[in-house]
Image 1 (cartoon, rainbow, N blue to C red):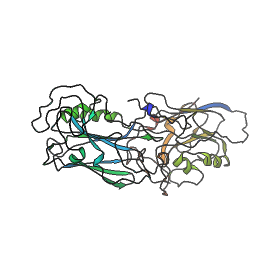
Image 2 (cartoon, rainbow, N blue to C red):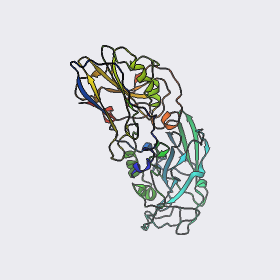
Image 3 (cartoon, rainbow, N blue to C red):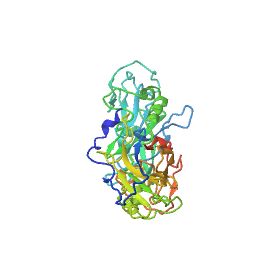
Image 4 (spheres, one colour):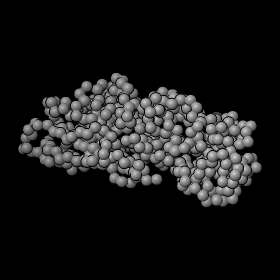
Length: 433
């Protein structure tokens, strides 16, 4: 699926506040200086799904029998939705799934939704087999067919009858706190004319970017042919192929905020120091909201600081990742440096509560040339409670308000309690030429 087409807002509305470039007015002695160019690129090969996984019963085979339940534990931001697919076991090619984009888990005010959400579950015909009367005696796989996916409402194309999906599957949503939810799916077909086991299944949550889901139909599209391994679930209850597909679509998506670059001499890195709390000089605003204005103004006044720049990408302002093969954004700046000068950068991990990329320790020799990406670390500013990156209700760039905390600045571990990130050089590339 070309999910780049889903992103319609980039030209008009940036994720983060517009920040214009700035530099200090300090005079720089030109004797012995050289002109270098620093370039920063977002090289993240992004994915449209923030989370995905599988579920199954506990028996052998691992189907979900009548009166049995399974749970799905996930995180989500406002506007994000949970979708899943599982086979109606005693049918030829029917499956249960929510209507796209899935089960919304917050109301319009951002309040978590809890309770029975069974009405959002639908029964679908995969279109690849002629339907027999549902029941234990169905012959698998049956006679081949070639039709599009359609919803089964009361009867299928062959006139077989079915209860409403909400009468066969009970879906209950519980909010666990800090943007985490548990969805419980219970097989309620026992004793009905549609008694059936449910197969092992798959589930997924799409990123939302600027109010648009990157993958609003991750598993199927009504009125279109089945794809990506869904047939194996719908016909045989085998979730392996679709699981492989959605795993490949799941990963990291984040923009980088406009890049702050500082050149300094005779002082330590003026942006931050690990083990210390935020200094109250503007780094918090950058780490939580991607706005470098206050930090840039503060740095300008520091002795030893020679130049400060804030580099915004054309059109989008933020640096976008690689999206569906299209190159990510980059910015560059010519800088005047001399012997002894150091250089450091800072930029927000856009889909976080208060994570930021910055130069490790005391930055780098500003006169060196080449790729300096290995000098960049991902840090936690310690000023906002962390949530799953890209799936947190209080993340500023997902229309939230960060929840305050006060902890020292530390490096973000990888893997961390939420996810495993690519190595930093696969997210941000910094070169000096």
